[in-house]
Length: 156
Image (cartoon, rainbow, N blue to C red):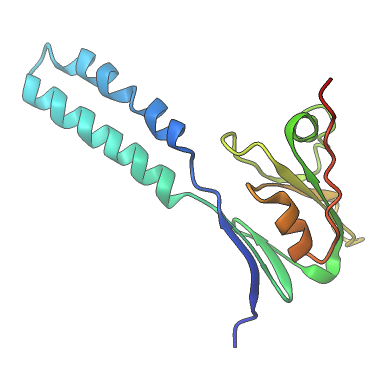
C-alpha cells in the first residue's frame, strides 16, 4: 500500500518560459526561409514543439508522504530531515547564490523564486541540505512537519 501524500507540486514552467522559447520560431525561419518556405515553417514548428515537449516531460515533482520526501528523482526518508525553512524574495536569492553550499543538493528552477532549505541529519551523507524550488514554501515546510518561519528580508 502506498503512503499517503501530504504535499505534491509539479514545478511546471511559467507561461513566460514558453513565450521566451517561442523566439526559436523566427530564428529558425530566418535560417530556413531562403532555402524553402515550407521547410522553414515545418522545421520551426517541429523545433518549437520539441522544446515544449522537453519542458513538459522533464518537469520534476516535489512530493511528501508520511515516510519520505521526493524531489525530482531524489528521495530521502523523513527521519533524516532535521528542519526546513521557507525562503522568499531576497532571502531566496541569497540561498540560491551567496549562501549556497557547494555540497548542497539542488532542485531549483529559475522560473520559481521561492525555495525551501531542508536540513539533512544523516551523518553518512556529505550533503548538508537540499534546496528545493516551490511555489508553496510554507505548505511544504508544514508537510515536512515543521512550523514555517519565512525568512524574508523586509523592503525599506
